Length: 272
Image (cartoon, rainbow, N blue to C red):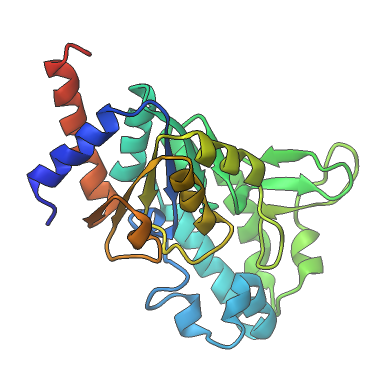
C-alpha cells in the first residue's frame, strides 16, 4: 500500500506543474474489466502460437475459434465503463493541470469519461475508416455491438472479407474498416503524441508495460526535455528505471488519492 506521504509528495509534484501529459496502457483498462493481452489468461497465454501478431493473427491462425475469440473480446469491452482512474484524469484536466492523454488502448474509455484531448496511438474500436476517402466516424456504442452480434454467431471461420461486408458503407460509397491498429500497422497520432511528450513538464505513466514501441519511447522524450516522470503500476515496468517516482498499485486506487490531496493543497494555497 502506498503511504500517505508518497501520495502527498506526488500531489505536490503535480501542483508544481502546468503541462501534464498522461501515458496510459492496458493496465488502466484492465481495472475496468478488459482482459490484458499479455497477462495470465490473455490471448498470449491461451494462444501462444501466432499471438505475437495480435488478435487478428490469433484468429487467422485459429480460424475455427475466431467467433468465440472475437465475441469474448467484444463482450469484455461492452461491459467496461470508465473507472476511478479515468475519472481522476478528467478531474486533473478540469483543474487545469492535464493537457492531454496519450493512450495505447482502443476502448474509448478516456473519451467516455470526459477527457477532451485524447491521442489514441492504436486507434479506436468504435471508429470506422473509409478505405476510399479516409473519412473516419465513430459509431454509437449500442449500434456497434448490434452490428457484430448480427454476424458473429453465423461465422464458421475468420474472414476479413466476411467481417468487412457487415461494416457500414461510407457516404462516398467506399467500404470501411475498423480504425484500430493491427500488429505491424503504423500507429496513429504519433506526431501529436511526440509533441505533447516534448512539451510536458510531468508525464504520468499509468498501467503500461513499457515494452510496446513507439509509445514506450515517449517517456524518454519527455525526460530528455526536462520533464518529471511519475509511474503508477501494480508492478515495475520496463520504464520504471527512468521514472522519478514509482507508486505500486492500481491507477484507479492511487490517482484519485493524489487528486484529493492536490485539492487540499489548492485550498490551502487559496486556489479554490
